[in-house]
Length: 179
Image 1: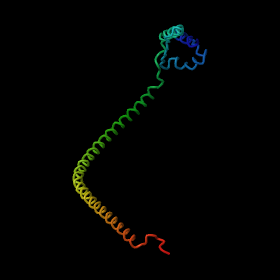
Image 2: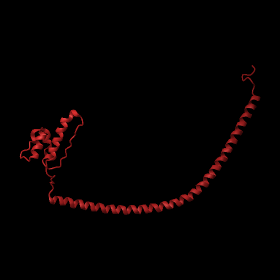
Image 3: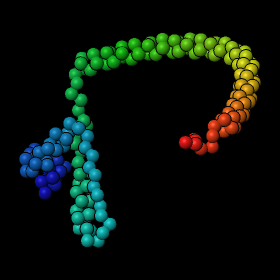
Image 4: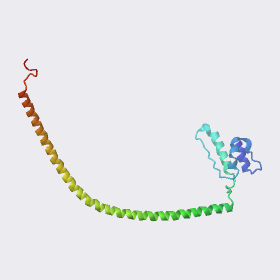
């Protein structure tokens, strides 16, 4: 295969490597040319009918393992690298200072929040007693009003019964009356 030919040429360190023999090797040319790291994954099948393909794949992997492509090259010049490094270090220092300021603000805010919480706790305790007393008064008042409502309903029911009896005695039995 074309990939095998490329690996063979690379392993023998030949001057001409046939990258143009297939689209796959053309696409992989930059990766295989030594400017990057390469990882090859080989899959092997446990089935007996795939034994020939598995042996072929492992043989290719063995050949590929023997190839030394060279380390990945950095294409950054020293001046450019140092400028980037200085900028990065300055930014890191700025961020560390900012973190220090924010931590101090957080400590102050937490201290103030704790003090407020303690004050609130005292007020809540005092307010809680007052609210309990008020709730007790409201409950008693509600119970008193409920008793009065029931008494008023009973009186109204009694008045209604009296009204029905009185109207029955005054009105004739047949509303059309004698003609």
